[in-house]
Length: 137
Image 1: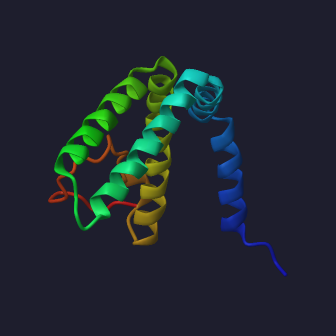
Image 2 (image 1 turned 180 degrees about the vertical axis):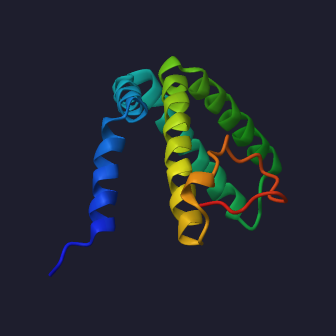
Image 3 (image 1 turned 180 degrees about the horizontal axis):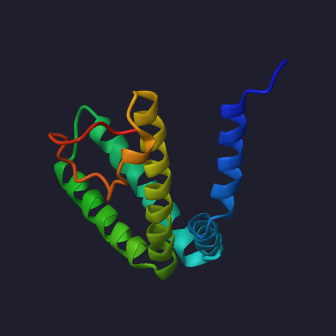
């Protein structure tokens, strides 16, 4: 069977992406976050509280005070989690990588819809208002 040139180019692009500084920075930040015991404990605590909140909200006889308490606890843990330096570094690196991948996907998608790839502008990110958007990928 003959090789599909476009698929091979996509694989090559994938390899280039994994050599890009944004990918490398994201991987390093993720490793640092994974090795941060305090951060991992906060993530575990957050997940347990989220499960407890979900269980309480599905009960027929919901306890409003308990729901309010759990909601407050989740917000507190989330704030501590997001204040962690390793989480912040990971979030920043991941956002940069996601923007790169989004721009690549936009170029491919709009090219497949017939637009000139050289005329497709890189997006600064989704602002949430779709009125002037040519579509998310």
